[in-house]
Image (cartoon, rainbow, N blue to C red; front, side, top):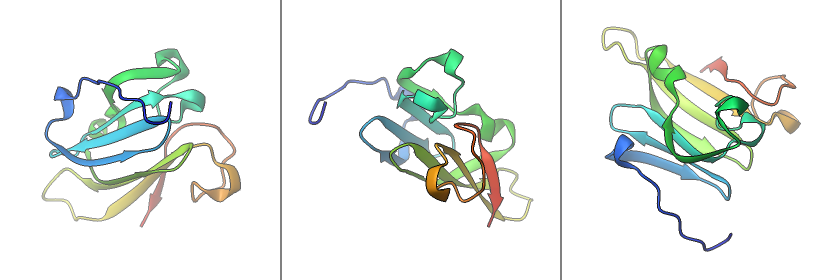
Length: 125
């Protein structure tokens, strides 16, 4: 698949503020701090349940962050894991940042001791 071009619907996250990608999935953050993910959801690496599909064709919002009043500030990914830095959406709250990681946890790459293959874990900076 190297060098292949795919057309995805991206109007949901326009304008993109940050983008991270690897060989099998992509992530985008819009200007309001919402995170969108698409591509391979194998082992729930995108943070969606396996019932939502092993492959997410078009950008899908990770509602976990907005549901918990976070805005995504930074996003990064490896081959089978994701890390994001978030800030509280409430402007009156202090601007303490948090790191969330999820995906395959092998070799401590998630920054916490967890042997599950999915889910989001919060690590306070």
